[in-house]
Length: 202
Image 1 (cartoon, rainbow, N blue to C red):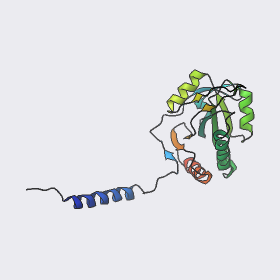
Image 2 (cartoon, rainbow, N blue to C red):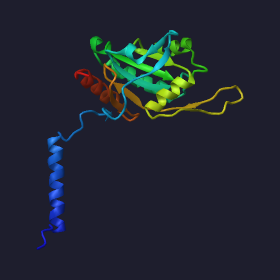
Image 3 (tube, rainbow, N blue to C red):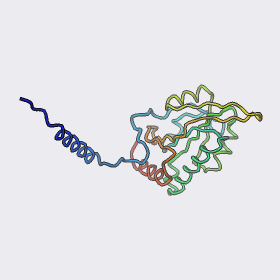
Image 4 (cartoon, rainbow, N blue to C red):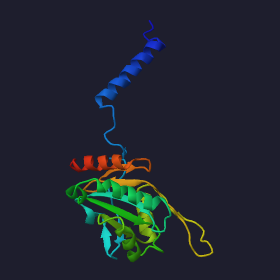
């Protein structure tokens, strides 16, 4: 005896099961950005900050952390992304904002010394911190989060462009990977995600 369901009836059951699963999970995603909890490793690095001090990821424990790779000579993506983050933070109250660090990691250590990094980040606000390191340190960090960077050919004046990731990684207060924010996400959506994350226990 053949107990197989007719194909049309099987499709109906499959669609119903999918709808039920969506209903049980709430349907809509919890965050606007991509949830990377459990997918990416905890935040870990050994770098130099904009004051010339050796720092580790643990030095920023207790606060939400936004990690962004770039360089100060970037003509477009870096300043635009930093301005977008600044706008998102600007809509938060002072107490909430003080629980967030923005870690700008320069992958151009040849030109971005601590003094230049400090000058760059100061135009965006006190929550922004410039970091860089040796090529070995930077490659270890970029490999950890599956991003790459590279250098273009210098022009006649010695200027060169640097290719790098445009994503913003968000880590919880204790360094756990939480979100991956792309360039399409709006200021309001980013702000909402940050507020929601700060309401959670890491």
